[in-house]
Image (cartoon, rainbow, N blue to C red; front, side, top):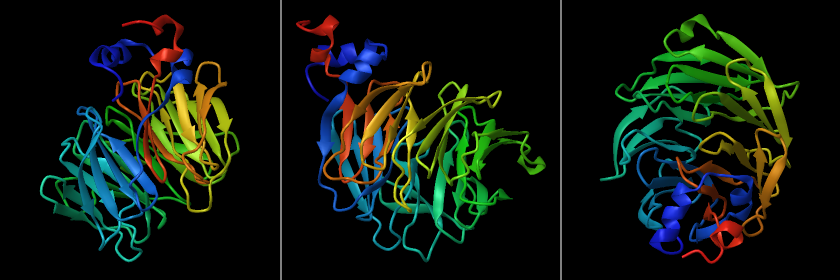
Length: 334
């Protein structure tokens, strides 16, 4: 996205270290949004990224060429959360109009709805797709979690919760997590009807769950909460490894965090619009970045799969990449 071909190749071959993380800065930004970005997602095996924003648009980007390929408007339903399916030409998204809480499978190729998923009766606040199978999970303010198959309009399972749920599949699709009320409940995806096989505490933080995620290797998980906390746990033992604190967001904002590809670092937004990074090993903050514009809400944030890049979404879409000129070993290198 910046510099010549050799520089790009260097970035791919570099291992992520604290020094490289601290060198990262905005290499490209798209500032043509007329509303706040509410969700973004990288496709796992292609160079595509998709965003959803309050201007009722879904935008598809090719990260490799730093171009916006397509803008699709969802004026009738609005758009809140968006996720790629295994096919980079289709996404599942939730609406934001307040009167139709259906989820929609949308073809980006020809802007056609392939399927509607009806079952929730209030705003969907969590959406997670299984990367290995055609199933996904959604959580709503109606205090239900629904399990879906992309090939069927009717839900495949329903779990009732007591609070705002955050949901996530692990990368293998064997386990999913539901967080609410200060606890993370772990379910066997094949036997979820039997209830959770384990329940993890996050140390007395009972504020509403925002986002729960697994690391790529499945060994770690994180939970963000409305109280401004990011908790990192061992996903096998449930041990709370560390907790980080940032400024809480507004009532309806979502605090999002993301593991780096190898799981050694966590990046997160903050209620003042800033971005922070911590070392999982030491538990210490290792880098931070100022907000884009005058934002006073947490940006949505995700690390690019297998790359030295992360993206943030607020009033603009920003891609952060290493600045090799700041790295001693690379200064003057051709």
